[in-house]
Length: 614
Ligand code: M6R
Image 1 (cartoon, rainbow, N blue to C red):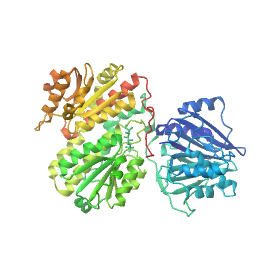
Image 2 (tube, protein in one colour):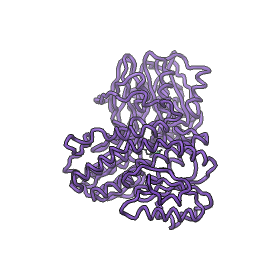
Image 3 (cartoon, rainbow, N blue to C red):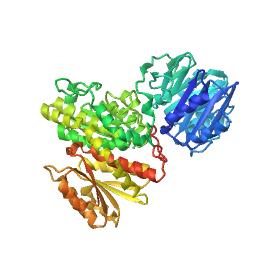
Image 4 (cartoon, protein in one colour):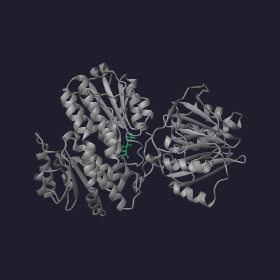
């Protein structure tokens, strides 16, 4: 949701913090701010809008030289995105500066307490109240660390907090609950960040903080305790992805770079999944085969793009394992009193591993004794840590707010999980699993082929600059692809877009069709079932009513030609695996159309990369 940075050491605090914020801006870009301590005073600069606005102000007049600082890039929750609501916030005496990611749920009660103490609040944020509370504690004689502990004990909700005190110019104190925070360990300097991107330019040694922990950081020392000051051991780890993974590599957008990385990321997500004897292995998955054999129902929970990956997974898991699967929006799951027990397997899909809706849904499931397996891209993030087992997707950092390579690698992980359950439960023969694995291993080349026709898709996208509405149709595993294609267009081009199951069209949505309306159709491969023929009928029905049909169909499928105003060819692949190739032109289409419309593709309006509030 928001990006948080902290620094103490010999470098320029302002520059180091701004550098970190630049790499975290994908997390939120409604406003940005920095605070440093110099000469016994706090110096704060903050501006509404993107980080560039703040940088412009600092270019004209930088903050005083300092070796300690904190910074924030915001996705607004409480209060509109303006200068006043931007972080850092200070206490009334401007002794404490504090940044925050998350939501303080009991902020109304705390605000009343602060206001009763005659403190004037300047902003609409919950964060400013915490800054006042911490300042009240230090003003009454506690050091910053104790003050943070005492305040955290009173807070409900999700939060990462980082604070500095003008009267203690050597110490940064931070706290976390249900919101990410990592420590970067340097030589004579230390760093804090919402994720490691904030500091990998300077150090690759890091500490992972657990729930309800506080970290106290000086140049030479890092200490972790719980909210009551009891020492706890934090897990040290080495960051092994290289910096270029967080750079654009010559592309105009991170998103475009990430689309073109997909052949490699899909290949990476398949590495090491088979033993020499051909058996599937999911090393990091800490669930025993006996536990999987006992599973009689699977519920997949996720949000947004990850939810659509879950919809594809349902087709694959049910087909290959005959285990019933439900797919549910994480934000709805725990509020409907779901029927789960020890034989239910919850599969939580999340690129970031920090999505609050998904995190709280799995906590609810575990409380009912269900086993939780996370499919996640971000090592050591909250969702895998709160789960019994994990399959990492190995896509590398995804910076573009719109998920692309995250989605494809989630699909691969779902296929692997389905095949693994089939192997364990014996619902598929080994040679069938082998055959599907070979088809999966051929997918990077197929995706490369699709990317080879990007120029055609770009032309098509640019021709739609004036379009106000686009429909997407699919069937079977192509239905979630239609939904995902529509989501990409909505979030990037801000164009009305809807995905439908093609068979459902005649039950209402066909009334939307009018002369010239673009309808993107994901045509299933020709197979033994009737899917392909039924899809063709749906396409004819919309075309007869004036729609302009843009069809994605497999190489060699001539039957589609009479009904397609535009035809984009896809490689020949099995129906269950088709989403891996069919989504790629839709990603390119949305990216190029948004570019042509002059939108910021990596940072679409009103969005943030990880949604760490419910
Ligand atoms: O990090 P997660 O996969 O849990 O995120 C879920 C959604 O917020 C995410 O997929 C969102 O819909 C993206 N903006 C889609 O491009």
